[in-house]
Image (cartoon, rainbow, N blue to C red):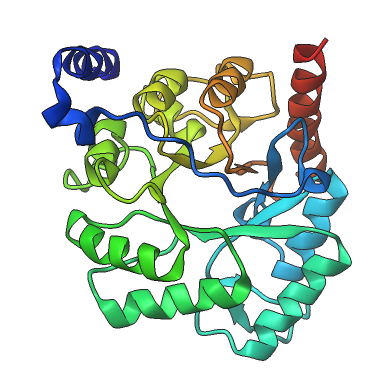
Length: 300
């Protein structure tokens, strides 16, 4: 399905004249410009804090650093502190004091918060401003979301005003919700194509595999629009696939990394490892070691 569409898009670009340049022009990948000190193998590599959702924001930051991550993607609703008596959650309603506390914790462990999500961006200006105002205070480069099509015009307005990117995320198909289409890269492309270059994709390769979609083909289809990636390996194709340590599943991780490199990817990779929930720091570290090893081998 994706290969056929990709070939068709390429064919159209080959035969289109100047009048269609706006649609067919190659888009340069958004660059987060993360300092070299926070790159691993040339990539801004860290975790999606949901990997540590049994723990607090404070602990997720500590565990990311312990695993060797240099950046982090925070998510809404995580418990803020490890104190069992404290039920404060990290959300866009967080006070300036709470935001400062999280930024201080990031600085303590020399991590950069690169994006925030996955969070709803409904077609409501007040609600979107609430999220974008929070993201600006937090200092992230992007917001990840699974927005409905009717939100896209307003999202584009917010992106241009705040200079914060929006990355459209994907989960697997939902049997009980046939209207859910974000699993399909073709649908996601239809949401972002022709819009501000800061509107792109948060490509979850594990969920592509659970959707029986080849991750490399999806990345090729979405070329130039990939802002961030959720990175894992999966033990089998299809909905029942479970996350497994790097290099032990069906994902062709080197091919994924090569494709990102070919596209001059300048966003971040978030390791989102949804397994071994209470003891997964070593598994996360294995993914970081895999990327580091790939980069070192590639450059020899």
